[in-house]
Image (cartoon, rainbow, N blue to C red; front, side, top):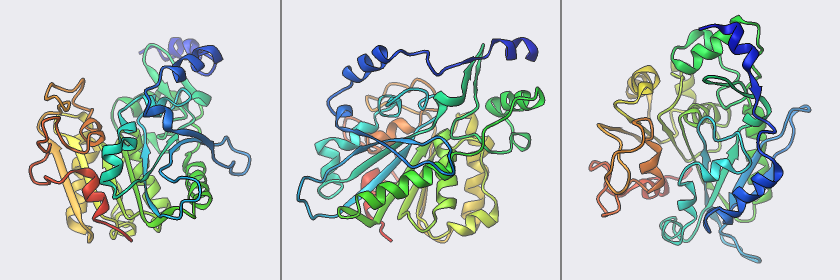
Length: 320
């Protein structure tokens, strides 16, 4: 790999899409996607703010309390405005069917990493401002850390973690919606880089979540001390067996959890990852797809026969 050539070719992604193109993309969203509004979290000591998108079940004058599902996207889906909504089927959780499964409604909160502020495209992709920023690439392995390591060795600075800004945005949301949020039922899930950030968010805010679901988590094996911090949070760990991240970070984490976790612990490892119509998923890494369909195939069969009641039912079985 000719790093000098690659570094010369780096092009900031910000500005690649014009305002007109972004407006066209929003206009082409599905009716469910359009139900998510746009909000901005607070700055932390002058740092860039975090966008987040919210589906609200509350109506004007409503006094009901609703659970909250926070969904953290994977790498590349933070590069464009509202891309976390369009990049997966997370908007399914705003459907009438899924809202009913939450017992009459739930907030769905989808933050966006600031990839457009520091993401660079080359012959591969070098994401320097994703959820993964701020971790020590010299002590991990795999395709993304290799690129980051090469960048570090070439003198390119990696931005600090966005965890302070994400935490500030989430606490802002919970404060603003205090009248209608059931603080005993705040749930967290994320996939790939968002699975990495799911762990970081639990560790940064262990007092907040009633349950969490790290999906095909990228490049993190929490230490025993870290796992003790969140040992009382029910977890459902999900990944594909053929996903390269399974052996790299998911399997070692499961091994540690089985030794230390005191709360409810579920593990689903797909032999193969399928779409809801039972066709093979685009990639064995795409184990978030079943989750966005509540862990049911279109014919009503559960993805994991050990857990036949689905994703939302499991979330709602837990409260602080």
